[in-house]
Length: 41
Image (cartoon, rainbow, N blue to C red; front, side):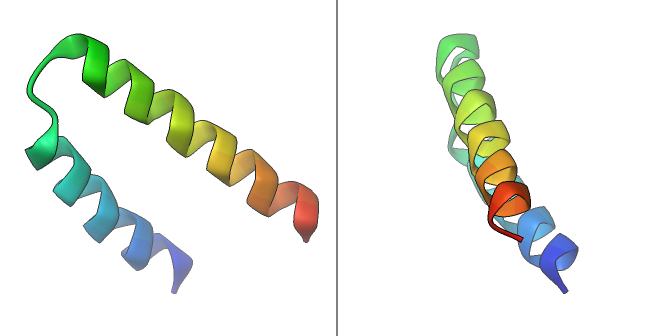
């Protein structure tokens, strides 16, 4: 359930990203979000 949501979100984010710096910022944001999700479980 979570993974399909992440996949759709990921595709949307990749589509929005225009340069490498923006991509790296988003990647860090996603990793932080996943870590918070895991810690809260």
